[in-house]
Amino acid sequence: MNLKYPNSEVEFKVTPSFFLGGFNVYDREETLENKLNAYNPNDSQQIKELMQRYFFNTTRIESLGPMHREELKNALLKALASPDYDFTSLLKDNDEKCFYLPSEWNIENPRRFFEVIYKTLNETWS
Image (cartoon, rainbow, N blue to C red; front, side, top):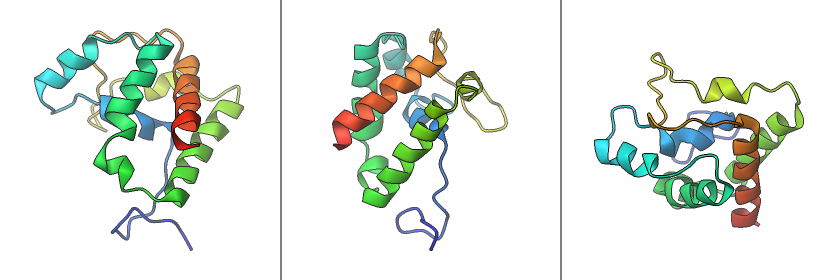
């Protein structure tokens, strides 16, 4: 049996980019980008705050069951376990996928950014 999104027939297949959804400013209220630009995405504590506010405490995530959460955790862990995983490509603006991070964000170490997300995930979902 393949895992589906809640109340859907769509397969729940995720990559580490799933964790960036709350930071996507494409076609969203301009105030969101202004709020996000106030944070430093290179500061571990600020990443944790961002994740709590724009990822964990959202109806999108709260609707996920334990199996979905485990799938998310495993997808990120698998990527982090691979020394060649290209985290930089996940952070690039993408016209085709309608994905843009806040304009003033410059994530200096993409792998570290996702490591902090993983640590926050473990602290929050343990």
